[in-house]
Amino acid sequence: MRRRILSAVYGTLLAGSALWSGGVSVAQAEPKKDVDPAALFARLGCTLCHAPGARYHDRITKAVGKTEQELARWIRNPEQFVPGTAMPTYASLVDEPTALALAKWIKAGGPSAPSK
Image (tube, rainbow, N blue to C red; front, side, top):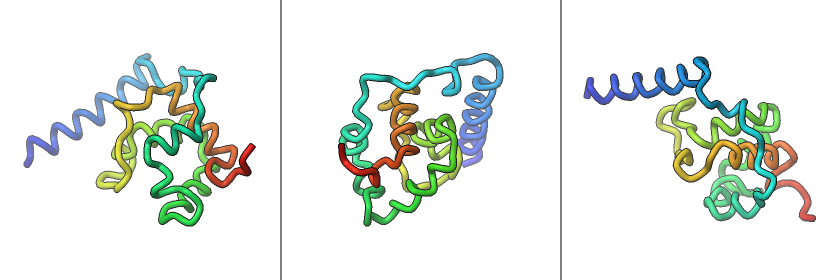
């Protein structure tokens, strides 16, 4: 048990040090232009929890107060911010530029925005 805790702490510190020591960070990435955020949101299953009327839709509406970089970091690794969160980690499925594109869409109203 202690080894798992130390491993988790080490992983968190290592991830944090990469952001502060010149490693690639979300702040250095640019949102992808060829991403359809609404389709990605649906394909990843985000609508199950975050669509209008869903259990965690209010979290999406509150997220507009965060920066795109903060949202992208949350999308890729919510466990880093809230250990034990029910939200899955998408770091292996969504790269930083894609997470930024999704974050930008969320800030623009995301699933609550009128369809185009």
